[in-house]
Image 1 (cartoon, one colour):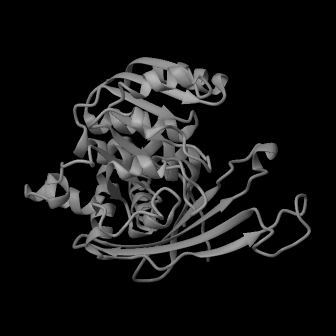
Image 2: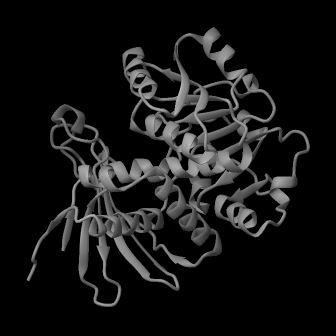
Length: 346
C-alpha cells in the first residue's frame, strides 16, 4: 500500500493535470455515469466546548464520501474522509483535515492512502477556473474574497485555465495582514501581473473594485452575503466555493436573481446561496456545458442572455468523484516518479 503525504501530493500534482482530470469528473456527474452514494456524516461535540454528543450540540463533523467510476482505460473506486474541526487552528492543525483511500476495484484492497487537504483545495479551484474559461476567457480583473489557500489556488487555477498571466488580481479580506501575505506570495509567481489589497470594511473601495471586476471569487466561511450585487457590471462572472450548508450564504438572493446559475452537482441547490432559487430560474450543470464545448455544439443555457440575467454565478460544493479521480491521478504520478512510502499490510 502506498502512503502519500501532503508534500508528496504537492510534488506530483500540477494544476494543468488537475484541471484535466476534474473536467472528466464534472462530465461524469452531468452524465450520471459515476457512482456517488449519499455521504455519511458523524457529528462531533468537542469536549472542550460542549458536554453533549448530540448532533444539535455538535459544532464539528466527520464526513465519509465514497465514489466509483468506470472508463475504458481503468476503473476507479475510493473513499474520502474529511473532518471539520473548528478548534484545530489552536492546535496548529488544518481546520479541514482530509484523507482519501484509493481502492483496487477488482480486489477491494486499499492501494493507497493519499493526504487530501491540499488536494481538496486544488480540485475545488478547478471548477471555478473551468467555469471562467467557459464564460469569461477574456477576464482581465479577478477579484477574490478571502486570503487563504483556496484564494491562492484559485488564482493559480484561473491563470492556468485562461492560459495567461492575470493582468490584475484584487484581494478583499477582513484581515489585511493575511491578504498582504498572500499578495507577496502571488507577486513571486508568474500567475499575475499586479496584485492589490482592499479591506473588506472599506465599503467605498470595495464598491469601486467590484465595478471593474470581470470575475469575482468568494472563498470565505461567512454566513451572510459579502457584497451588494448591484455593484457588478453586466457580464461579470461569480464563482462561489465557501458556503456548504443551507445556513451559509456568500452571495445574496438579489445578486443571484440577475445571474444565470451554473452548478457542479445537483446538491449545490441546497446551500444558502441557492436554496430559494425557483425551478424556472436558468440553472445548468458545469459538466453539461463542458461536454457541449468538447462536442462543439450549442447549449440553451449559454444562449440565454436576455434581461434580467446579465451576470453568471457558478456555485460549487464539491463531489467525491473529484476526490477519487484526482487521488488516483496522484497515485499514478507518484508511482511513475517513485514518490511515497510503500507499506506492507500483510
